Image (cartoon, rainbow, N blue to C red; front, side, top):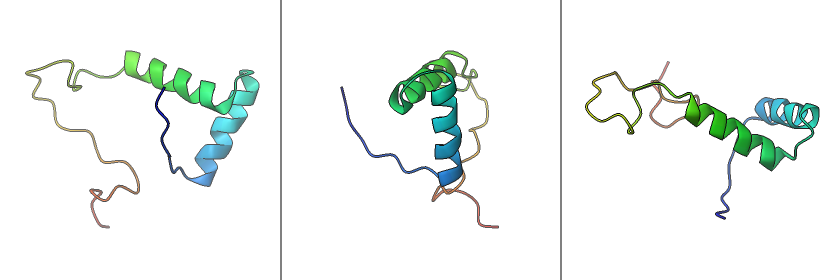
Length: 69
């Protein structure tokens, strides 16, 4: 099992904690569940579909690669 630090906005942490409580899971278990579900429903522009010429997804909020407004 790999451990790593993840920085997320406070409001997202609150939403995740509330969802974990509602689902009777720990926050860690809820995050793993959501990641697995998300990866199983990801769009075709993922590396698992070579040769796809779909545009890259937009950078995440707060990313150093996000466009400056």
